[in-house]
Image (cartoon, rainbow, N blue to C red; front, side, top):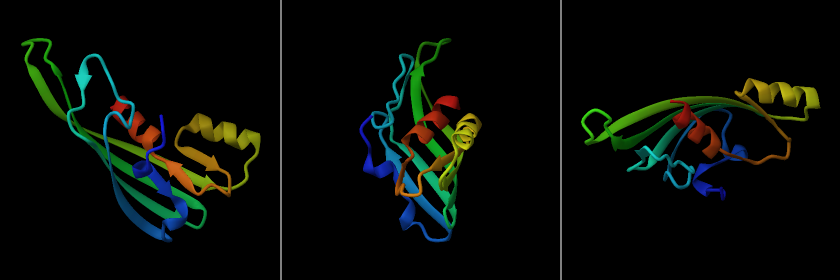
Length: 131
């Protein structure tokens, strides 16, 4: 997946405290494809970020439309999807054990102190798929 500038969160641009931003991506940009469903509209994500120095707590709401054939009547059906994701990003040095523990948790990402941007596409995509 090539990086989409629309889904890149620039950590240094965020003010201390509460921040809100919106992202719109196509299904192709999120690598969403399924043999039974189509994504006829853009995927929208509204993300709230609470920044405290080098810690960033994200809560996102992802919405889109999906369409597919109804298995009962065989007509095309369209439905709205609303999914949520959470993520805690910590910009700091970490031991291999801390990194492994954060990876197992799934809601914490420890990144190098030099990291300036986080790509949110995987989190948005995962939220939709799990929903």
